[in-house]
Amino acid sequence: MCRNIRTLHNFEPPATEDEVRAAALQYVRKISGSTEPSRANAAAFERAVEVIAAASAELLGQLVTSAPPKDREAEAAKARARTAARYAA
View 1 (cartoon, helix red, strand yellow):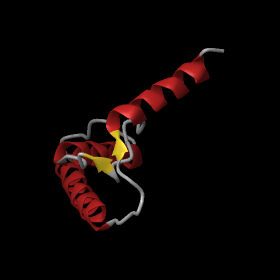
View 2: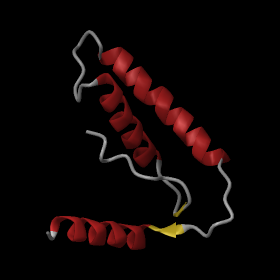
View 3: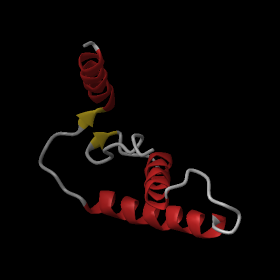
């Protein structure tokens, strides 16, 4: 359920609002145990996503590093190589 949560820090270009919100949504789905809330829980679910997205964006804005920014395409290629090696057996 939460495999779509990706590292968002130290990339060039920086993470977008959509990427931060998608990670927050996956987090809320994981801890709530449901991918789609009932109507009774929809408002609480959406509020949680918004609060977590805001906290995540604040965190990303405050983090500092001396490492050079990572390239999204290079990181995606590494992930594909790891997946190919894992499932090649």
